[in-house]
Image (cartoon, rainbow, N blue to C red; front, side):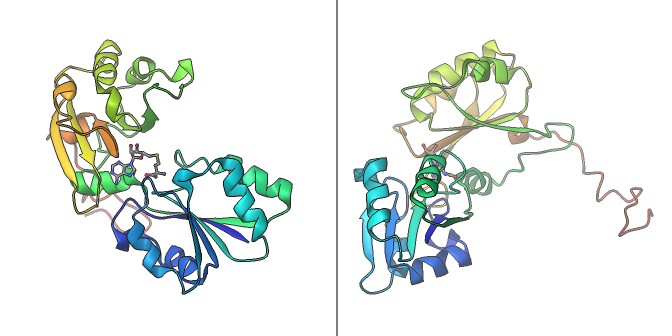
Length: 246
Ligand code: SAH
């Protein structure tokens, strides 16, 4: 059985309890070494076979799985496996092979970054929508999802895999309708000991990277500003099935 496990954003204690237990019982661990904290491998039992998928192709990963198909295998992905995790192609190969699998969610860096920023992505009267996307670079993005077109919503936006593309992001967000002075933040290695946060505006994004070229999220939107409305849920005059209006 293969367990796809979300390793969390970086800090060793941000893996889920279930994920940790799966690591403890695994006979084989294949971990995404480019981003997963290697400290998590301390949970592996004695004699566990460990592979770093950063040095492997999809076929090589599947070959390891096929060789150990009757054992407990953990495929450890950074953050939550459902975001830019390339798990669909692996799951489809496992179906072809007749190998059972399940998925254990993880804390995405998307949440790690919000915690680092002490921010709420969805503020009343500011934005009730978060767009998770990436800028097109070596890997293409469908044209209908261009930064410029997504910008037209003025929603909270969080960019993965785009630390090297902030010039384009800045230009396209402004072309798409954001005010140049809309707040922006770059979060490098959220929840790792060497986490860094740089704050500025969409216009100043290109000057904010300060040597950061990867393992960073770029977040933009007025959720990073100071103006918002209070929630209705906790307003005294708001009645719910749990609380009478005061
Ligand atoms: N599944 C992962 C994302 C994998 S794609 C998740 O849920 O977080 C890899 C990209 O994720 C990186 O290029 C970077 O944009 C982002 N990333 C991963 N870990 C990060 C961290 N600790 N801090 C900031 N960004 C991170």
